[in-house]
Structure formats: C-alpha cells, structure tokens
Length: 409
Image 1 (cartoon, rainbow, N blue to C red):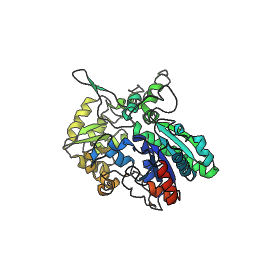
Image 2: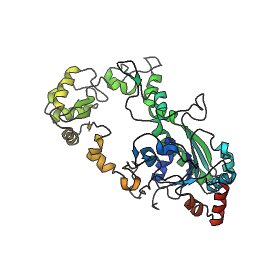
Image 3: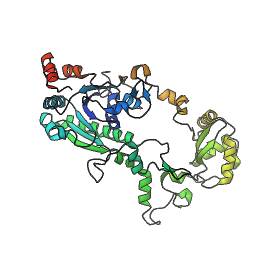
Image 4: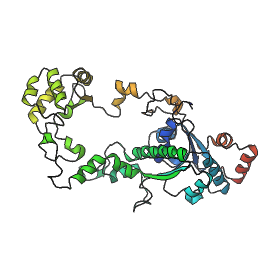
C-alpha cells in the first residue's frame, strides 16, 4: 500500500455477502486497509454471475480486489472476541448483508461501541432496515425495477424479459455508503464519537434517478405554477430524459461509420455548427432560443442534419466539435468505448496478470498522490494468520488456541 494514498491509515472491518461489498472497494482503491471477515465456507460471490475467470467470478475479482480475507466462525464465542479485538483499532465496520446479521452473532453496534466509542458502523442492504420490504430477499436488478429505472420488455409471444441496461442501485448504493462512512470517520476523529448509518440499494437507485421522479412530482402541481421550458413555449415535456425523444438539435445521428450525439441546445453551439459546415442558412432559418432549444418535432431540420452527419466519420465529427466549439460526442457500446482515445487516456486497464482479469481503475485521480495498484481478490482466509499476527499481535500460542477451539474454522 502506498503511504501517500489518501486513505492510508484507515482500517475497515467488512462482513459482506455478494455485491454490497463494493462499498469498501472504493475505499480500498484509495488505500484503506479492508479486512473481509468470512465464514469458513466463504462468501459465495466467488461463484456468482458471469464470466468465471479461471474458476473465479469476475464479480469477486473486482469487488474484493485490494482486500484481505480472515476466516472467523462467528458461531464460536472465541471468534466473536477476535472480531471485537479487530474493532478496537478499526475506523469502521461494514455489515453488507441483511440488517442485523452481526447483532445475531453478538456483535451489535452497542457492543462494538463498548470496545471502541469511535467506531463507525454502516449497514448496506437491499431495501434497508425499515419499511415493509426490509426482510424481502432480493438481488441487484430488483432495486432498479423498483425505482422505475429499468422497464420490462415484452416479446411477440407475450413473454416479459429484462432488457440490457446499466445497473444503478448495486453501484450507487455502495458509492453513497462509502461517502457516508468517510463522513462518519471524519466526525469520529474530530469528536471521539462514532455513529451508526445505513443505506438501501433501492433508495440509491431512486436517488440517482431523481430527475424523473421529481419531474412527475412537480407535474402534480397546476400548470400555471409548473411549466415547460421557455424554448418549448412553456409546454410541459415528458418527464426527465423521455422529453428528449422528439429533439432535433439534441439527438443521435448516424455518422459514416457509427453514431454521434449532437447537443447544440444552446444557440451559440447551433450557430457555430451551422457556420462550421457552411450552412449559415440553417441558422438564419431556424435560429432557435438562447438556451435548451432542441427544435422538437422539426422533421425538416432533422432531415437536413441526417444528411450532413453522414458525410463524416464519428472521429471527424468529434474533432469538428472541438475545432468549432459545438457539442458533439461519440456514441458507443460498453464494448466499443474501450477503443476510444479518451477512454484509453483516462481509464487505463488494471493488469489482468495481477488481478486475475483486466479491470477498470477507480475514476478518482489525485494529482499529488499515488493510488495503490490493488492486489488480487483473496481466497477464503488467505490472510487469516497475517491479520492475526500483524494487526492483533497474536502470538503462536494464541493462534493455536483459536484453531483448536474452532474459532478460525
């Protein structure tokens, strides 16, 4: 671990199952010491989803990278005492599973506070610790479906299916959780008092999609109080991104070798585009409003733009946007974006020979600090002895006693 890493010196104890463990992945990437405490059987994340890379799931290789694995059988009172020893010198404990799992093993927040008043205790779960769904079993897509982020598709035979989509809740929940944990640690280091917090991945999915939900809520008010944009003559559009569908100056267009997203919603961008392609007549005919004018429904303009955009490659249009100060971006798939020069400049792959598979790095960049290159996700109990010796200063006799008592599985 690089000592110049932003979270060097932060130690977090994690008890997790499956995807919610990503809450500490973000912190490990920034240099925190993450000790993943596992049951003797281990977290079955190693077998979940696809692809399976040399016998281990990509999910585990990514989410558990940079962490250390310690096996403790928390059904054993001696193992519970070891856990409390870890808590004594930790900054935070993460319960990334159904709420109350640790408390049922004798590791409630109250008991942890007895040994470390500064401890920050965070529970991350599917639907949270309250509400009628708190005990409802679930997986990641449930939170996006609940929040209205992803809608079912129905085929010609009437069967519903999941469309391809970006997962929101399982990624946003851990990210919000990591933010909350860091806020708690800052407060604890200043005041000497820890805190307890919780985050639901379903809540996070809804929060990330706030614009659509809040638009619907706003539209419940009278139309003389909540209107559309000035450029639409104050007519209400469909909520959120649905209102983009009829756009013309803000729309996808086919290039000679792919697609681009044209975003000349500001009058200045539109004027620069028209001048750059030698079509000042388009601006004279349809100058538009100063801001947020998408020229909705203008099929005549759309036909003109369709023909213009087919004359250059996607890369040429991106360069045109830079040269003429107008908003044009490339449109890719999760596969093709990897070939883009901006992607290659900003997101260099973490090496597969180190991590078990090629992985994307954290998007955070510190200009005056080195971030550690993560270690490969651990096997079950890979670091048990090292953690007991280096973190807790247990000697051979103590470790032998724990093994004989069954505390280490």
